[in-house]
Length: 347
Image (cartoon, rainbow, N blue to C red):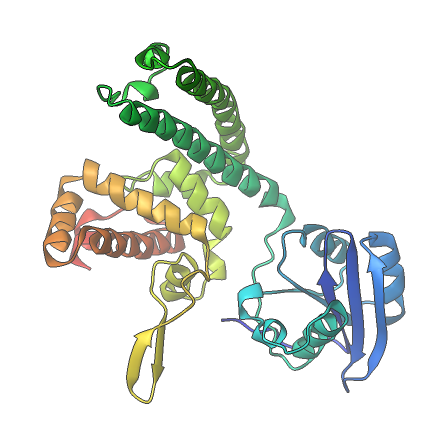
């Protein structure tokens, strides 16, 4: 967990919503200078905090709509702090909770240097990262539609469709398996949506690759040397971490990628922690996919995976292999080196 270091004379806590935002400005002595509920108007917000110039830190909880506030602070050279929502226990655990209290607490936590920081992703790469996430969402939606057709087929006790749904030519005959008209119509509706996704997803992939080729050739070339990491997985890793230099150690990187289990220790007793959802789920997915594909396409890694399966369970073996790949990728990107199979298997 990273905490903000107090550097300015004033602190503005913001409780941000879709259409409104509650502000609380305090000085270094904790005196409240302003407490106001306003609309999400950038110009009006800047006018309100103008009396304190650039000697004010704007702190806001990481919600779905923080982008615009971070951008206007960056454009005006105003210090901005993004608070990690899952770490703000002082707000969420309060007996009395409302917007007025929340914004004041954010300001006071920032003043005391106890504001847990989340990463404010840079504007120049943010749009491509979000496009990557939307592409993955569409792929999962398409897979769910295919799964539903398979489910319909099993409900009718028909012969298995197998992998025919993955091939466009094999989909046309799928509705013929269903005798009932409504069931057939459901299958045809699913196929229509699948066809639409098939037309959109390649366009998204082409656009992402065009954007990525402008500044990430080095990282793509390095990740391409790792067996099991393809273009999509590599781009997910690159855009979700932004830059490997922001992680002080491989432990920080693996923790951010959800590759390590949280652990609580007190009085010599250890127990599983409760922060499993703290971190980046998209990186977790990328390294899990890399572990599956590496075990399928690389004989040495497959042997290691089978050894882990015998010692643990399949799920645990995949998690261990994903963690190992995460550590290797961190050092590859940090040092600018290609995949070394001998070193990977020895560590």
